[in-house]
Image (cartoon, rainbow, N blue to C red; front, side, top):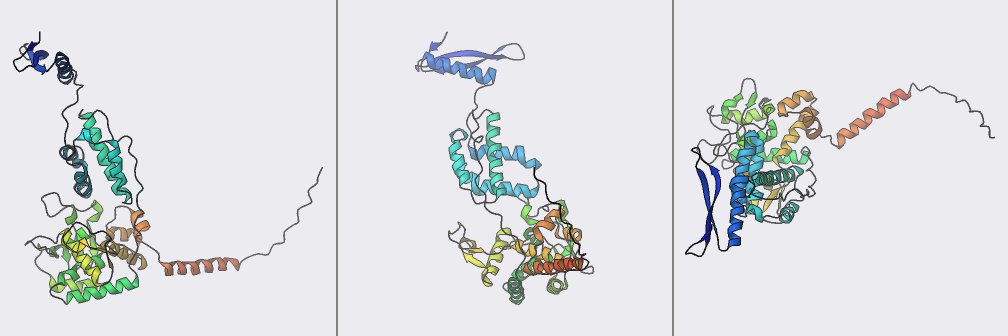
Length: 398
């Protein structure tokens, strides 16, 4: 029978189980009124016996990282982990990190997703994947009663950026800048960075991961074996984006002339960071690229300043380092290189990526193709045989 305590609360105990010795396991509950006491008894039975009660609420900023580390991270590649970390740190945690899961409504989530409109389809899909994963897991863990993500819809993604090779004017400006930088002691490394991107077609992280020992000066090749962009938390050197990314790339004579006189010990990074022994960081490399684009007039002022403390706050490049990679692939195609060989040198996993994304015909190529096609049809026309058609008999009408 419930007893009223000196505090004014009604208190009683309920049996929730039996221990190994056969003794009852009891749980004490209390309430300000008998009705509250009955509610407390029902909740205790649901939690301890039926297992149907909701568990304590959790902060999104605490539960979501736990979900990621437990459910997702073990099965992700280093490149995918980098994408997840970026989405969490730049977008999700600033928006919902200090909110309880039960307090976040479907309407709020949809409004936030709508704010991603115009971003790439990959980024929007990743955001949706994380939200559905986190809230679906929270429902399974009985932290929330209903999943607010089931009614979410994807906003319109922005058009994919046009991938193309450099124009002759852009190539000329870039090569001129490389030459000028190599003769400027204060920015010599900037010129080396641009030259590596231009002459080897590497991803930026691969370029920053190069060590002098990766070069075979006799064979005029470089072995790409690491990528700084995809380092795990706390590490400085990461794995390559894909297995196909480990490859040998020919070193053109122009690049040999630039790099060979500057070579150092095998375990020294070609592009060195501010910290001794460390490679050039991603942030520093982005600033180097932007400063170079400003030099040759391929940067523009941002309409809305970014929240950072360097050039990137007010400026953005017109072209990115990926343009040099596209340019390299196009030059391989123009040289007549076999597509499968180009795929291996560029480091693609799928032939279609090389064929459909990185090799772009420009207007002159289309014009040349038109002339060739016309000549083919003209040659066939010379063998044309004149035929006299027989008139069809008149159709009888009834």
